[in-house]
Length: 242
Image (cartoon, rainbow, N blue to C red):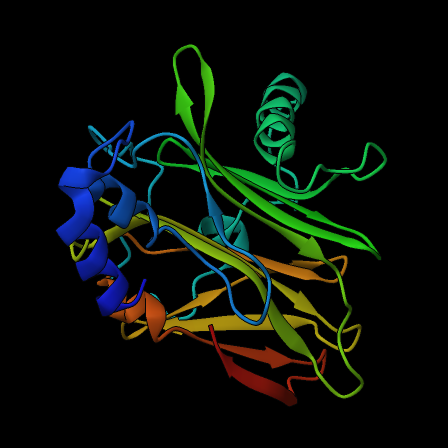
């Protein structure tokens, strides 16, 4: 959100009838970053975490690059058990229903969980979406989502952001459970994300590159992250800000 909008919301907070504090509403705006013209929509629950499990990443400075199978994403694009994937799917589809429903024939292109947060990415020729969920004892709760048209990559473009989401305990505090998805061209075999002095190797397959970023990064670090795409021979194809 812009500073002016934040100030306006804070100034008018006493006159608004909301189901949560204005500070929570503002905090939600930081959680799913989308570039270009696609809309950003946040879920209906506050982004607060009691703790972070051992699955969340805190990576040493010397870990560069980090093997995708070990840290940046799971061993495949979809890494949830069938029952968990079905439950997460129901939560994502319910969250998108009143905004841009997920077509019945579009299945998750990627899915993974870290630190009590699950991310699903939907992608086909016409539809593009990303869904982030909190994992609770009684199931999945919506955190944030973004849906739009899949325009495809223009000729000569090798990498484009689909979604980037993170959690933070405050508007300016360090991030955790940060996940991202980028669309890549057929020429791309490897994608590395440079962030906060570290390099993370994404999981690349089926036209997308998926990654989790280290916990403890500042929101400025996340905003300044850079993705670099290479072909199978290691030739640099593209570099772009996330």
